[in-house]
Image (cartoon, rainbow, N blue to C red; front, top):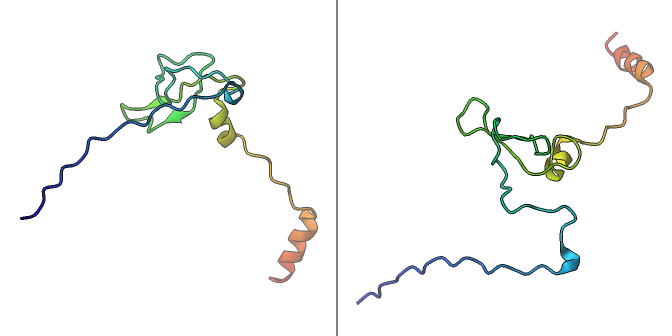
Length: 102
């Protein structure tokens, strides 16, 4: 007769203790979950990164603590990209590229 297989209950992973030298430099509040702030609950020092579609009912903001500017550290990395270096010789490069069409 075939054996019956019973699925095991999922087990949550045990919390890993963090050593004192591995603590994050920015204090993390335990009740800060990304997407927990609405327009009405958004404060001055909260991340204003939009999450979701503004026309939907589930639209929220990140809401994590922001130290400088409007975004938390993670969203500031995405928002502020380094400036690209511009190619030199703008007018001469344009004239050179147009010569092939004249």
